[in-house]
Length: 95
Image (cartoon, rainbow, N blue to C red; front, side, top):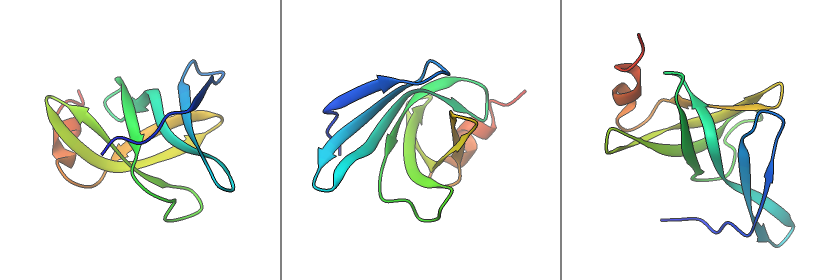
């Protein structure tokens, strides 16, 4: 399922943040050039509401497979960590 991407902005880390306009204000729906644990930048789609104060459920594609995980932000830089379905696809690429 693809989320709406009504507006976008670029942060200081040159990542494009996409937001959907919902009741209550804009909601983060995707991040272009999000940094993954293997160092590659990928499009990451937000899949739900934040489950803690520090992480947001998300997914990305690597080697043709959908990888589940979560997004965090550290000093304004968004990072994706694989922890769900196909989590080993990105982990195998770490050198």
